[in-house]
Length: 205
Image 1 (tube, rainbow, N blue to C red):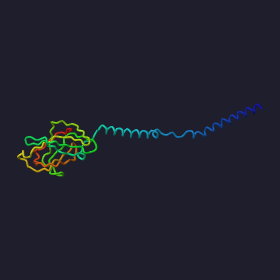
Image 2: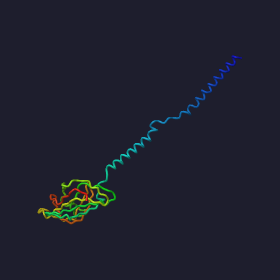
Image 3: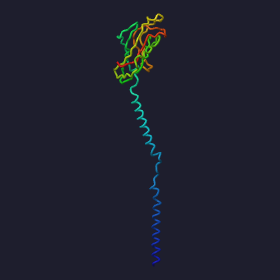
C-alpha cells in the first residue's frame, strides 16, 4: 500500500507539471506582439520637427529682411521747381509718394532721362549722379514721400547740342526696371555726350 501511494503521488505531480508546461507554450504567441521598428515610431515626429524648423527659419528671415524696396507700381511722382535756378540751370525736387498699402524702402538714386513720351525712347544722356548727399534709408509709410534734388541744365547752354523737344521725364525708382513718366516739356540734347540732368540721392521729405 505504501508503494502504491508513492507512485500515485509521483504520477499526479508529473501530470500537474506537464499540464502547466503545455499551458505556457500555448499562450506565448498571444503575449508577444510584434515590436514596431525604430524608423516607424520616430519618422513622423522627425518630419514634423523639420517642417516646424523650416517655417520658423523662413519667418525669421522675413522679419530680418524688413520692408520691400519701393517699386514704380506703388509710387506716384511729381516735381517741385520752386527751388529756383542759377547759371542756366533749374533745380527741382523729384518727389515720389508711396501710393500703396504697405510701407516700402526708398534708398539710393533714381534713374532719370528725358523722353519723347510715356512710351518713347530716352533722348540723349541719362542723369548723372551727385554723390555730395549721402545715401540713406528712406522708409515710406503709405501716403508718405521722399525727395531727391534734380538739376536740369538748359539745352541752349550748349552750342553743339542737337536740340530735340522732350515730352517729359522718365523716372526709374532705385533698383527697379519699371518706370514712371512725368509730363514736363523740356528741350533735350540728342547728343549722348552732353549731360543735362544731375540727380541726388533720395532723402526723407
